[in-house]
Length: 76
Image (cartoon, rainbow, N blue to C red; front, side, top):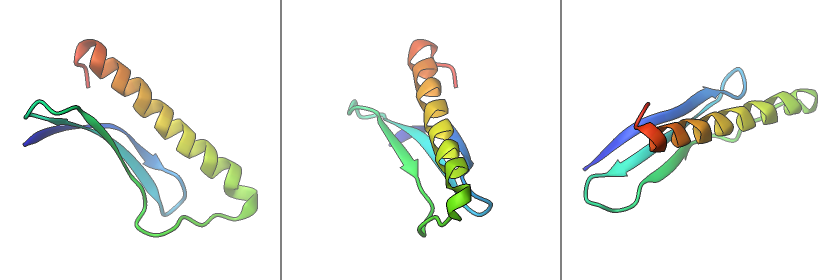
């Protein structure tokens, strides 16, 4: 068994989103971070690509901050 905590989630285009979760097994094995990407490739017009890249970076950064908070005090 394991416990899961959503660290961050958000849209990267009008149709796609990513979610980052923390998986904490209850059997003593190390915790894992899983990134759920869209099932199909994400496509963006070249002029929109900087916004897509920025959204991905923001979501990953938010998850890293949430993970640090979780480790420090168990806050979710």
